[in-house]
Image (cartoon, rainbow, N blue to C red; front, side, top):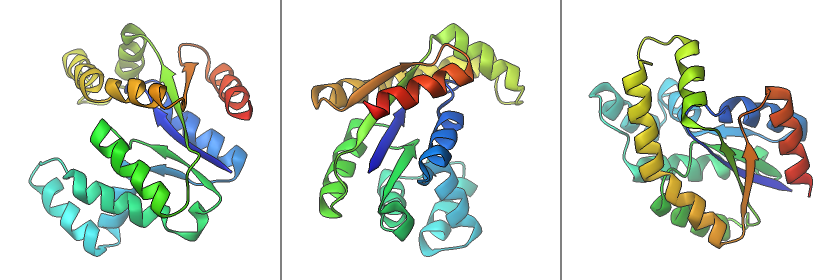
Length: 184
């Protein structure tokens, strides 16, 4: 049973790699951004709550994201494994997830850190050409990532759950390396 959490800076290729690997392993790729959009689209009780924050430009509170993750991991397709992308983003969320996985008997998760140097991810994000992706905004997102998410690398490293993969290579090479590290 494969349960993976993907970490890595914006532009490291987490979404792409998680999607490819999930298809290869026939398990769901669970992106918290995707769950949020889906819940809002379907107007679920949690989706309606989340919509009010999104509409006012606020960040969706941890509790709400945690509830959505809990709801998603409880669905039948997640019983045989999953890849989580975009959660946890900080140590408090990692602690919540650890308790949740214990409670629903889904332990044994491993964490893949898709590492790539700032200059590479900045170039990639600029190449995507999204209008909100200015170099200044991207550098700010990287700072936030390093401050909030980087402590997770130590958190999972201390728990011997961390696998690091070099994200600074071709998409195919990253996929190959990922398949190797999770098979070991």
